[in-house]
Image (cartoon, rainbow, N blue to C red):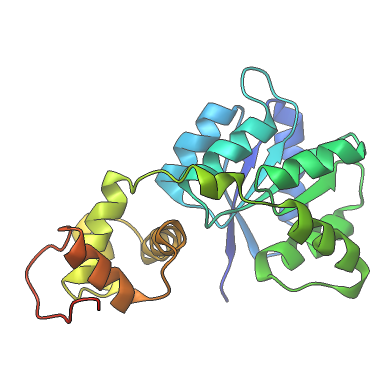
Length: 221
């Protein structure tokens, strides 16, 4: 069974523990880490490449909204849900504008959390959540696309491996990371470059001089 790898971000230890306990209810979720600041969240996202991040909206130094904005600039593939005690609608809209996929209140029942998070990670829209997803589609606009960052050094390494014809398993062995991490890196690269598949990635690598070795490949017309 495929499991969704989750990073929990909250500056209060008891809140992190509570979120981890809720996620433990359903074996489809695997908590890979829990951190107490936005800076740690950004660093760990780069290291662990989670599928989903839960971020408290109110944290010192860097709040959840700014943390979300920065993570989505560098890792647009990852799904982020903002967690808060406030039901102020302006917070919801701001979270979605920064690129979050969802918004959860801390006082909701654990079963509601699980139902909602499964809908987010599986991209299925339960009928009872239709309005929330319509709002998401309307307000989660493109500030993150306007300021797209360049590929990271790791992403360039993986792109070079792809261009040489390596499989995900071979890339993982070469770089000393898991296949799951390779897949998430590839999702991230495809989203950053707005490409669809490995063939397009290989063409891009050749055109940009990022290919790890020469191959015969038709030039883009």
